[in-house]
Image (tube, rainbow, N blue to C red; front, side, top):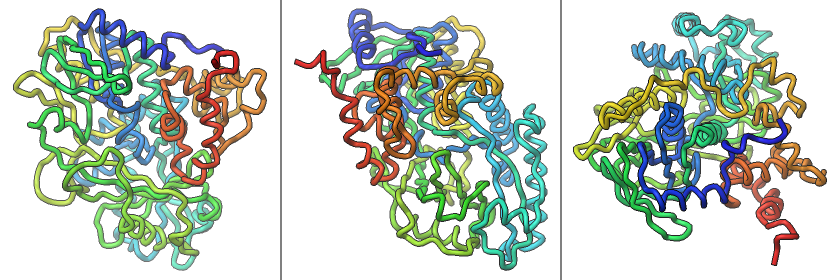
Length: 515
């Protein structure tokens, strides 16, 4: 495919047309506020069932929590340890759908090694081994084959060092090797959901703030022009995550901050697997070392309660950086230093307020709440289970408002660019582009027609052709959208500076269109 489906293309011109159409006819079946993975998932579910849908996002797609995850598609293993069997099975089932049906072009199998050093005594190692076996049982119960995600197994000391040469060899007894799902980019999943929803008729409006929200209406404001639209909706869903209580004050959340570090892959001596590292003195908590397709490595994850006003863009405090370095250095032969860290990012999780205690112990189960005036709020949950959250939200909206909808279709609805592994292998484009764009990779290459310079990497492998595609088809409107969300160049400040001029060049109109 060299030309994307125009129904799935988001850009400034389509946004303008959609706003004008909404001004002429301000009536829809469903308004969704929030352009993260939950909101875009709800918009897709509802549009696929035949409802008229508006998605309003104050900033940009994946502006909030959805771009700050570990990029993992979890199978629910960690929830078994706390007895949350229902959410564990749900996670495994949703992981299966993402890997095999919804987004096989964006999700891959990731090997994850838990090294067995003296800090993990043999009794604890036996318990962990049992947990991995239960994780295999979850995988099988979800229908995921060993070809898609290999079974967990114990590996020798020699094999552990082959997979992770940077491990400290002293006292290493081997390791437990398991597999989970990894997204090439969490923000790309959100963009794919939004574009697929648009292809089914949803109006996706970024830079569109909800100033008033009620069960059957809302006041939206175009933040680019200041113009307001009074929208009538048969049902309204608040999917603004950790900021949900700004629109529905009755919602009670206990936000937590998760911090990640960005490091060069060379700092780990050539990782061929992710690492799962027990946090010393904390039962059931682990830090993760996650190799990325661009050669970088992410290290996370903290889980710290956050009190007070919530920032739109959180930052990583030095205390989190020091904590993560200490945990990772407990298993490395050559300790990492603060100067090795080339970037950081932090995200806020919308955990449900439940009880006193560590936010690490709060359930990741989601909830669909209806306020006194009828606004439906979706909170809790996690990226992997976005589809189930969306299904529950649309079911609730349909029941509350009497919307004529059929059953959910998203279990078998592939996102734009998705295809089977065999089909993806035949796409005539570089593997890196196929992993990010699936069957649309040739269309990305076509953006460089007559401009071979647009195929030259700018930073982290990203090319000018991808920037153009982001503007023409993925809803990017400005420099920040391109640097921070359509690509992740901005995660490393030095990369951002290296690519800034090329991004600004892409934003200029073509020469024949300039005054």
